[in-house]
Each structure stands twice: as structure tokens, then as C-alpha cells.
Length: 384
Image 1 (tube, helix red, strand yellow):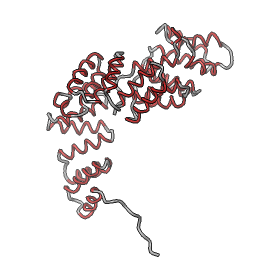
Image 2 (tube, helix red, strand yellow):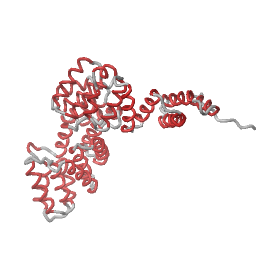
Image 3 (cartoon, rainbow, N blue to C red):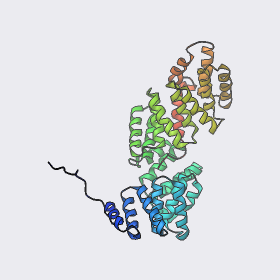
Image 4 (cartoon, one colour):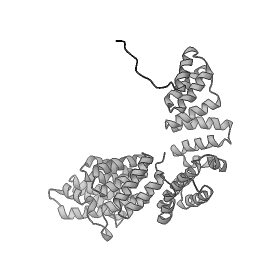
């Protein structure tokens, strides 16, 4: 009985071109065409390999340099991609596509002013994401009123731009204009910024399951949505699922990097799941960002108490209350110090009280305070 080879699918354009290149390896036109085909198929590493092969024979012309920039950008190597687009822009300073691509690279490397400077009217009229990016850069640079004013004008020019509406929803919620935030979020379709904004509004109204559904939709749209992960983590904390909450909040804190409140929320999730080392990592990260944020000092006081450091807990809670007389975590620490000095079982008491005990003015809980911090929000969205 004779064997038969396994069935294969139809040959792709890239495979055909690579076959031709095997017979004519120095053919620059074939190499360029193959690089373009690899990019079209989403094979970014192969695209760059072929472009390097071309460059070893002859310098890349502008069209292929642009392709290299796009492939590098697709690999999220923003610094290298930005250098490529900057070099190309020197020869074509008014090219709106190049200006937008360089602006995007600068935004991703936190050069917000440099990105904003590139987003002129021609870029806004040409690049689909340019209007939203401009609002996001103004949001980062502040004040919020400037971002809102510019964004509202752009919304009149581009009323069907759902990404822009999502960016505006984020600015509005950070400006504590709940009605405006909801209005823009509802115009943002399935974009993650709009959905996560609606989720935070539901969460602040104690509608936990509807909020979770919205955060899941946001994360289905973009898995690294910082606000989607933040909101989902907070909702899971309230539902009593600290391990799942910690995973979401840790990732959100990494995406935002500089948002103290997200690190603090992450720390509380670790506290409740009994992971003292993980809690301390998150709280210390928050402290490194801002040692005058009262909730961080109070949270560390609670952690000191869990680890039996009564003197440290007293000192930190005093510092926290000096910074903010209504600091909830410091109030929790003080009450636990008074109730359980010298007694066993302190850590378990703290874990039980940490999220759901009404402590602060008006009966606020730690969980409610974390939601409020989430509503205040980090700048931007963690968008990609």
C-alpha cells in the first residue's frame, strides 16, 4: 500500500514569492514584494527579516523604510519605530500618515507634548485615530478643561468617531462630569474606553453584575484595557473574589504605572486573599510614587499590624491621619489597634474587616473607597 502526503492548503502569495527567491536570491524586487506580502499576512518578524535581507544588498528606499517602521510599530517597539518615522518625516515633513505614526510612537513612549505637536488639522482629517489621540494627549498634559474643550469641538467635526467618543468619556469621568461621561460613552460603541466608563458608572451605583458585564465587554474589545481591568478588579473585590481581583488589578497597575490608587487597590486585594508579601509589593509601589497619599500610609499601617509590628502600625496610621483626617485605611488600622492589641487572630480579623466593615464617615468601606479612587481614574486609558 503506497503512502500519501498530508493535504495542504493553497499556496499563499508569500510562499510563491519565497519560492521564486530561492531561485533568484538577489532580486530586490522579489524581496520587496515578499516583505509586503509577509506584512499583509501579519508576519512581522518575517517582514523585518526580508527587509534586512534587502538592506544587506542595497539601502531601503522610503517605501520600504516606511514598511519597516510599520512592522516595528506592530511589534510595539515604539522607540525604534519612532526613529524610522522621524527620519522619513525629515524628507516629507507634511506627510500626514508619517506625522500620525510618529505621534503614536511618541505617545507610547510618554512624550505627550511631542505627540501633540504633530497632530495638526491635516493629520486630524486624514488619520482615523488622530482626533482621539489628540484628546488623550491633552488629557495627559492637563488641565482636564482643555482636553474637554478641544474634544467637544472635535466631536462636532467627527460625530461618528467612536474612538474619539470613548476618549472623551474618559476625560469627562475624570472631570467628575458624570452625565457628560455617560453621554459620550454611549456614543462609543463597543470601544473599551466607552464600555469601561459605563462600567465604572454602574459600579459607583453598586450595580456590580451589570458593571462586570460591561468590563468583560471592554476587555473583549481590548485585553489590555487598563480601565477595564481596574474596574473588573474592583467589582471582583466587592464580590468577594480577591484572587481574581488581584490578577486584574496587578495588570492594571502595571499598564498605568504611575496611578497610585490602582496600586493601593491591588494591595488590598492581596491583603484579603492573605498574600502579605504581594500586598506589601503593591503598597510599596504606591508609596514610591507618592509618599503623601494618605490611603497608602494607612494601608501599610494595616499591613504592619498584620505582621505584628504594632509600633510601625501606630506610626503609619498617625502619619496617614495627619495627611487626611478622613483616611479610611488609617481609621481601620486605629480601630484594629485599639480592639486587638496583644491578641491572637489579628490577621484574620483584618482580612474579614478589610473590605466590608463600615468604617469611615457615612459608613464607607474600603471597597467603596477603592471604587472612588477608580472613578477618579488614572490619566489615559491604557489604550493600545
